[in-house]
Length: 207
Image 1 (cartoon, helix red, strand yellow):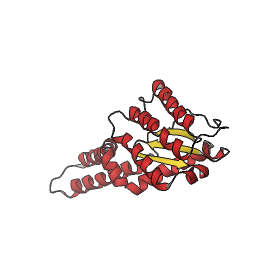
Image 2 (image 1 turned 90 degrees about the horizontal axis):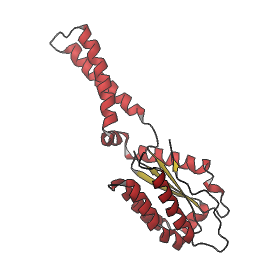
Image 3 (image 1 turned 120 degrees about the horizontal axis):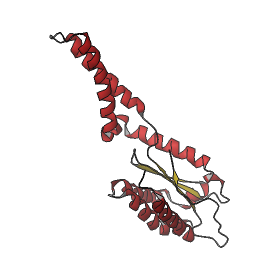
Image 4 (image 1 turned 180 degrees about the horizontal axis):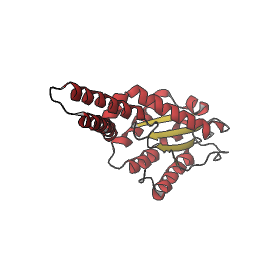
C-alpha cells in the first residue's frame, strides 16, 4: 500500500472536503489490501498437489526410493502453496465471487460500526470502502443517507468507483472518482445552513 503515501492522503482529504463543502453527507474513505487472508485456499492447494505427487511416486512403475518420496511430497506442498499465493486471479476464481463479496461486506460493516459512522446527528455518514485483493468497493450509507439516495443512483456511483481497479494508477483514480462524486452527493444530500463536520475526514488504511 506504498502508493497511498502522505501526498495521496493530502489529496484525498482535499477531495473529501470538496464533497462535504457541497453536501451534508459525512464521507469516510477506507482502503484495505484485502478483506480476509484466505489462507485455507493455499493450504488446500498444497495438500491436493501433495496427494497427487505422493500417489504418483508410490504407484509409478519406477522405484523412486524413500528419500525421493519424502522430499517430493514436501516440495509438492510448498509448490502448491506458493503457486496459489502467486496467482491472485486463480485464487479469486477458486474462492468464488460470493465468498469474496461476503468477506468485503463483513469487514466493511464491522469498520462502519467501529469507526462510529452511525453516530452522526442526522445519520448521514457514508463509508466508501475499497478492498484491493477482491477488487471490490462497498458504499455503506447510514439510515438518513440511504433514504436520500435512490438505490439505482447509488448503484451507478458504485459502478464508477469500481473503475478504480482497472485504472493504471489506482491511487489517482480514487482521488478523481471522489472529486467527481461531489456533485452526486450535493444533489441528493445537499449541504444545510447549520452543517458541521462530525466525523474526521482522514483516510483509514486497514491492516
